[in-house]
Length: 318
Image (cartoon, rainbow, N blue to C red; front, side, top):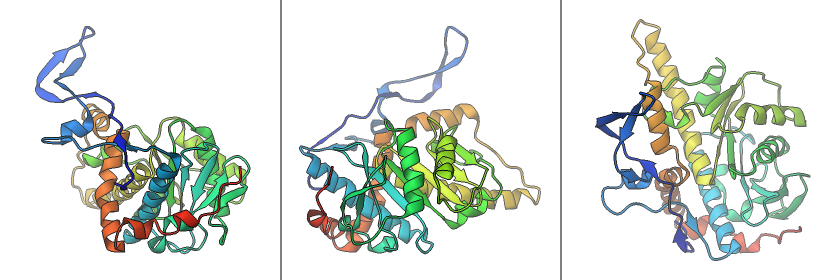
């Protein structure tokens, strides 16, 4: 967590699962009984881990967001999700909701700092500030702006990369099975965009990807293209991208084994829905990302190294 964090937002309250106390509702449907706990309280044996931090000023919040955005790029590089100039992250500005920050075209993800990032107007594409020494990715703007405009209230960050496992599984144009506890974060919350329209150089393809994400999905498999994930924070979107990519890798391995006759066991809808409720919550997902980001800060020589250049970013021209 950034040193500028002031306070923590209490996560939403969710029920604790108690398997041996299954009750029936008035409609005869099994109910899960137990004490009320947040997901972070449920996973913490002792003092609960804090959720998404809040800040005393927009400047402090912006620095935190852009520093974590740069660290997420470094995590992406460490995972091998680089492919030339392809791939991008966007984050909505905390103060000006019609603006978003993106990575510069051609800057290696493993070298990213807060001072590299560019600020654009979501509606017009005008570059309004940040580091203007490089251009933004034109295809990236078309995809990200369409999604941000479609879901302004729950999506603040978007990740899109051409990962190996993601591209391999996308060739089948199929959603993932709930094969493991972790992938249940995407239970009934990921889509398949099965109408590949080529490199994105026009508004149409971005709008179609936004259509595929719909109003509730946390990610989408883009046929013959790659993966896209969204989140309340860049931390969440980055963690979910890694999870979706690993889900594709697991699915490919399981399908290969199943082809020899082994039975595939899929988590039931009831259990998958419970896992989703308890794990796929914005404060829990923010916290899930912190071990990887803290590792990136450590490997870089400290959080301030990744924050380098923030103070030198060009002022926003509103």
